[in-house]
Amino acid sequence: MRALLLTLAFAPLLLAAQTPATAINWLTIEEAQAQAKKAPKPLMVDVYTKWCGPCKMLDAKTFSDPRLAEYVNKNFYPVKFDAESGTPVTFKGEKLENPDFNPAQVGGRNGTHRLTYKIAATERGIAYPTVVYLDSDLNVLAPVQGYMTPDQMEPILNYFGGGHYKAKDYQTFMGDFKPKWTAQ
Image (cartoon, helix red, strand yellow):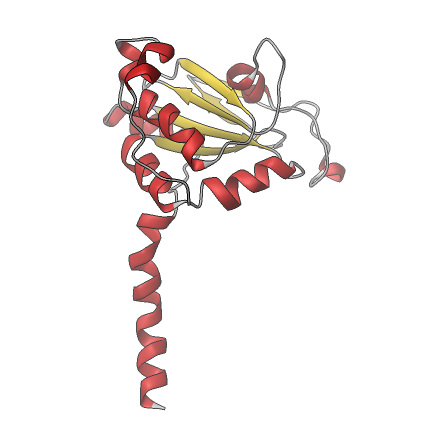
């Protein structure tokens, strides 16, 4: 009985000790903007929807990878943003909403939030998931659409998180890039 009580007493400490290395510390867009003003570093915004299968895979298989989570927490302000949310946000001083949001459709397809149009749209339109990289001044560097494994994301994270985008284009960077992660 005593062993069980000790185990139960220390379980939260063991879990807390594991969390920073294995989980991304997601922020709201407002929290990330405030932190980027104080200590500049790029933002990584996961633009997802609740109904999107590849979005769920990105959470389960990619964002849960401890190597990726550690790198993201160290080099970015990570934001998780529901592309069809009904919650207003402020981005670069502008209040953005989802005028087509239907509360009766929560969990299913819904209207698209104006922040999604502002940061995640490409020439091909909007797709989910889209991981958007922004500089510390909140300028969109690149919206990257589709599911990716941790190994596929590693060079992209290094390109933006390491500031390489300031000095060379992505193709040149990839010519010099040496992956550090091995497939798991």
